[in-house]
Image (tube, rainbow, N blue to C red; front, side, top):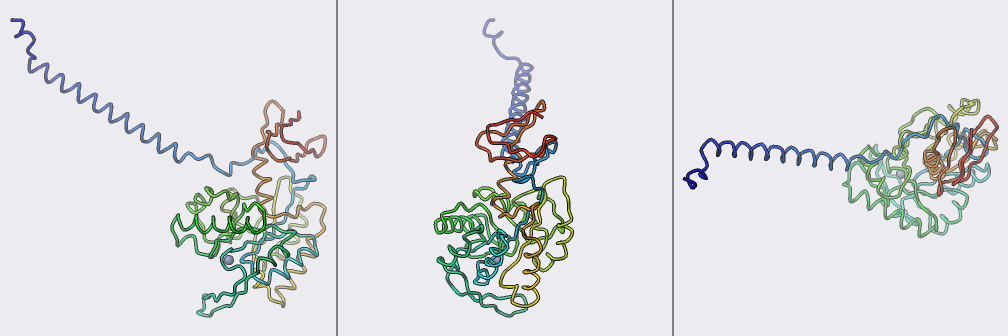
Length: 327
Ligand SMILES: [Zn+2]
């Protein structure tokens, strides 16, 4: 009898099957949720360009709200004259150099089927002419980042960083995309290299700070800079702004385009309300403002951050890292 009682009835077997099926379904659902969570965590990179707290009126050093970046690509010998022009007017240039062709002459194909011959600066000249300017990467052999894979993009950037930082003994944290070619996924690859800001060639025609420092669209190319000059000189911004000009020194020649560059530099130089700065320095400052916190009317600049400048009702104030100020 006992044995008979222990025998499972077909009804019980069916019930057991159903329970196992349900447990299986629950496990599957949990597993699915777990995978989704992992994936979400993987993509949940805190945006590199979270805006700074808008309730704080940040200024650039000295209480300025305006800045000028002059960003020129390739590291060709025409940079010698341009860097000297910037020196004359105390303008800081950002020179984006491909480390591969340093000291060589290369023949490049251009759109209409012609070729151009480019002579690149030697190591010795680089150290001399960019003394007062920033040096940035430009892709070791100037490959189009939209036409190569992730590994090759990383190589193009890392070789530049290694070579240029070894040569100049400076930290290289900026890049101008070769051909200006970039998109969202390229910028995410760049973000893994230690580069803090990367310039495209897409004009914004305005003086706004970028939403994403790794897809930093400049104001305009050098040939349009004079068109925006008066607007920027007259501008009295209540927030941080930047006039960001890009170009190639080898395109300036010695005619009208060069004369325009001279006129631009002369007119925009020596202004008390403009910070003449390289893109790397400006990017570092923008990132520093994003780390400043405000709570219960107390502004705190965390330890290890840069000095930040604030425009308070009491006047322009310099807030050191590790310090706070009540407003
Ligand atoms: Zn280039």
